[in-house]
Amino acid sequence: MKPHLQLRLREGVKHSAVGSWVDAIADPATAGPPFQPDVDRVLLGHRGGVLIAHEHTPARTDGWSEDERITGLHRVFRVVSLSERPFSASLIEELAALPVVERVESGLVASSPLPVATALSRQPAEWAGELVALDEARRTTRGGAEVVIAVLDTGIDPTHREYADRLEPGFDFVDIIEGADDFIGDRLGADADPTDPKVGHGSHVTGILTAAGERMPTGVAPGCRVLPVRVLGSLRQGDHFIGAGLVDNINSGIKWAVDHGALVINMSLGIRREGSGLPHVDVIRYAQRKGVTVVAAAGNDGADTLYYPGALPGVLAVGSVDRDDHVAAYSTWGAQVDIVAPGTEIWSSWLEGGYAFATGTSQATPFVSGAVALCQSLAHDAGTRLSVADVTSILTATADRQDRHFKTARAGHGRLNVRDALALTSHRLRGTGHNGPLDRGRRRVPVPA
Image (cartoon, rainbow, N blue to C red; front, side):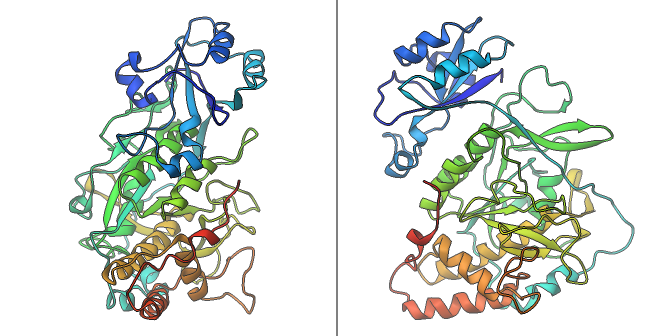
């Protein structure tokens, strides 16, 4: 992917038919120009030419759905330079000043520091599962295959013994700017192979969620399915690798996961805000309208910092506790933190069929995503489905408080308790009489306008 812009037209502006940027990678003829006369005129000033395509693909073959239109996803386009020349500030300003344009921003590469994994010799302990009462929770449910958890991450080891039979066909949205030599492995061209070439982070997260328990503790929701979505490439930084990817491609991964059946999205990542808009806000609104719960890592800087999508309203932001049930010193804190879960020295699956310990809010996040999936599994068995607001209220109401306060800046509503969350879910489902969807809370989820 060469330098690009994200452009959003105003409502009602007519334009020529174009395909998505994923389509344009395979066939540039699906893209514009011609696109829209005023936009085309300004873009003539960019030397080397451009391609213009939709940022997203419609969920249906017959056009954009009501939810896509309400959230404005049908009006978002990607303007890609056909040369290595970046777009000038004056051209971006000229585009932004057009009456037909609502917003235009440069495409940004976002990086997410990842925990360093160590293959220690000591045996993996069951302390994390014990802390959140997993053994007792499994007497109620181990999750159902009808509930799909999307893991948006660095990809996975697709043949790992712990979860290979639980994988749905995934996708790789990593398409980094050409010439980015510090990226290792697959970095160009979206495709249907979400294999992680180097990092291991996504495999670690997936094991925590759904591991069979052969050489590690059984996953939180081993009966559920996983949809692997690779949105972070492998960027060398000194002696280590970090996950990095274009913000726009992460957005594409979120929408794709929603459109391909995910009921829960695990994002063990977070980026700081850059530019005028809030990262991921439109696609998160879309996910919430579709009833999909997004669970995200709060961050690992040990400060009061906003990382997205965790800081967006309606997203469950997860902090980390250690073996002593204390909020970890590295765990990012603030009003955005909803709940905490075990995240320190967690043993899980790695690359090449291996295993490793890793530490971070990235490791805490799948404990919460797995709990959401278990609650939704109970609802499915009862013939219904929990709304995003229902899930959030269940997990926060049953969390074990760190003190007498209802919510604190460091621990949110408290530490996850899966057993009690399932008990409350069962109680609420009995209250509905199993006669209809327990969906009354959807419109109460606060989302940005």
